[in-house]
Amino acid sequence: MPPKVVVYTRAGCTFCATAEADVARICGELGHGWTAVDVDSDADLREEYGDRVPVIMIDGREHGFWRVEEARFRAALA
Image (tube, rainbow, N blue to C red; front, top):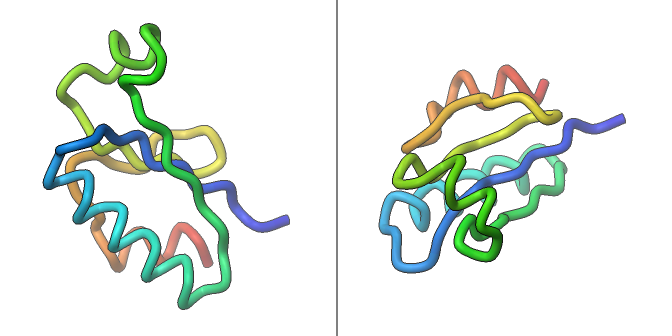
């Protein structure tokens, strides 16, 4: 079963846009799907993540935040 990748993000966040582009590129190269969730769409998510976005989750566990560490991210998806 392929890993489930989720990026918690928000509109207007430049770090989020960069992380989403990196995740999209890497997941695309490796043939994995991914989803983005806007933390501002849910009060609980907004409270949990606040300004600590983007947050990258793999299989329900936090993998990293603020930026994608490409080598580490690729290794986690391998």
